[in-house]
Amino acid sequence: MSIPEDKKEQFIELFDQYVHSQQPRREFLQKLVKASGGVAAAAAVLPWLEGTGAEAAMVSPGDNRL
Image 1 (cartoon, helix red, strand yellow):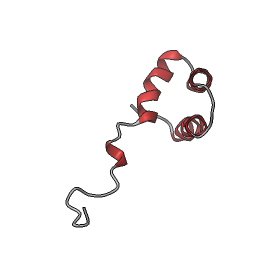
Image 2: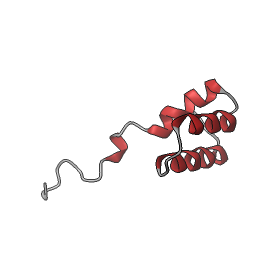
Image 3: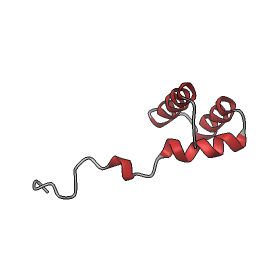
């Protein structure tokens, strides 16, 4: 999926605000729908925002310190 850079920043800011606050998920999703232009677009953006967890690896599996 190709997301314009200006929208990427907007979506990341919304997600960051949601993750680091007590904001209800429903409110976050309403803001995401408004920012993306519709429910279908928000549904397409959400997996991109949440990631897979694979990106979270901080140490390589072959690191001798493990």
